[in-house]
Image (cartoon, rainbow, N blue to C red; front, side, top):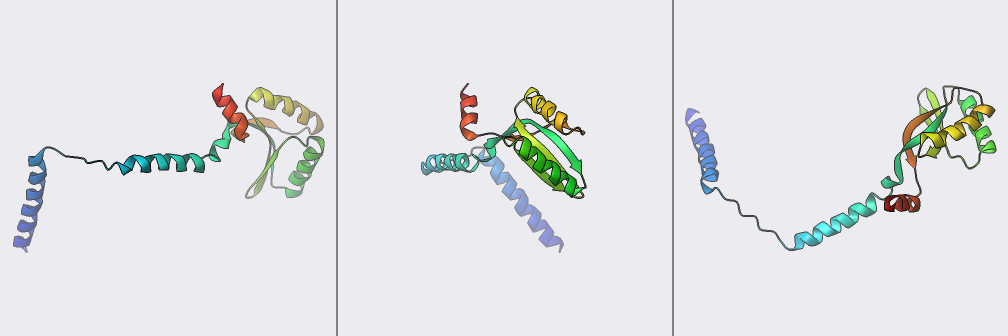
Length: 144
C-alpha cells in the first residue's frame, strides 16, 4: 500500500514539474471561432429582446388583501373608470395584490394616485417596480 502511495505521489509531482518547466502556453485560435461568436451575439440579441421590454419604474399599489371578492370587485371598478390603466393582479398565498399602471417617474404615478384616491379612498400608494414598456418607444428613448 505504501508503494502505491509513493508511486502516485511521484507521478503527481512529475506532472506538476513538467508543467512548470515549459513556461509558455501556445493558444491557437480557429478562424471559425469569430463566426461562432458573431452567431452567439445574434442569438443573445434575439432571445433577450423580450426581457428588455421591462425597465425599473413605478406602479400604484391599489390593494393587498386576502379577500378575493373585494380585490376582484375593485379591479373591475377601476377597469370601468380607467380602461387605459393596465392592472396587474398577483396571488401570493394567502393575499391578492392589485397593482396599477406602468409609470416611469413617481410624479406620473402621483397623477393617477390622486384620481384613484378620489374614487376609491383606501390605502393606495406608489411603489417601485419593474414596468412594461413598448419596444419601439424604448428604442427611441435609448437614442435620445
